[in-house]
Length: 320
Image 1 (tube, rainbow, N blue to C red):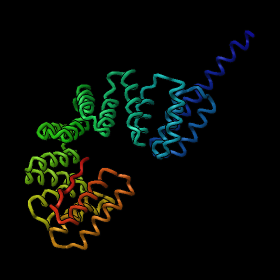
Image 2 (image 1 turned 180 degrees about the vertical axis):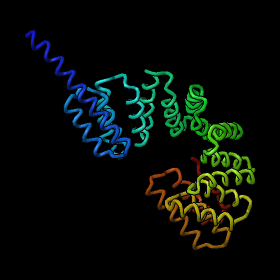
Image 3 (image 1 turned 90 degrees about the horizontal axis):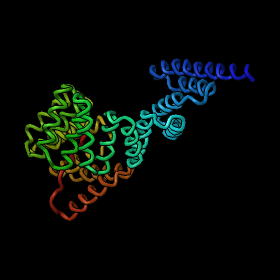
Image 4 (image 1 turned 90 degrees about the vertical axis):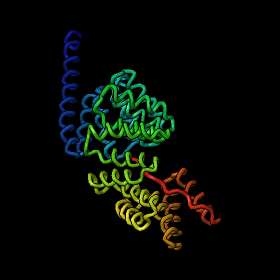
């Protein structure tokens, strides 16, 4: 018994160290984006020592990279069973629920993360995004502000703070937020695009176009900026310029609902009725495929108004 009492702890320690070494090997594969191979090594780690939460957490990260969210959840669940205060696992499980559209469950996990570490700015940022998607804008503002307080150089938090101000129709506050985001990161194309939206809502279309142009200069694949610049030209009644921008947006992103809808409206202005109908029908089809009920209702309402020869609806900006 005495001998067993000495041997068993030593064996367990050996197996634990073996699992840690497997984790190190697998992490190298993960960094090289060789996720399947990394998972095989994490499997060995878990087989060697099933009680190491790190192995499940890391294997969950690999499945996350492979978009296998059910396996992701199972692995994060296993990690949290072994370590109920594993704040990174709470945060990443929250990210998984967020991508699955379960924002309430995501919020619950982010809340657990900040409970264990009140200075975990990433979890505040993530929770702010979930609140934003639930249209709980005041709570989103509070979380983005807290993330900024913890990390004043967090450009993404300023950007999303600005998006929330736009949702609250507080456009000048939004511009101030985007100013700070672009000051921190002068190459942040999204911040210029979104600042352009703020100027657009303030009817300052020339300034909006300038910001969209800057976003496109920084990111030539930014279909949202092309769509939005098309909207600004549309507002200025420069319909041919608007059409060019919508065409470019759809070249870059053939499934962009807003661009089909907007191009349909500009085709009406250009007296291209059949092309307009085709674009609006395509927008409806994509909204149905993407299960975007909000946009679907907007588009159907617009089509109904057009059929009744009522006023042409407004174009739709896109935010990032």
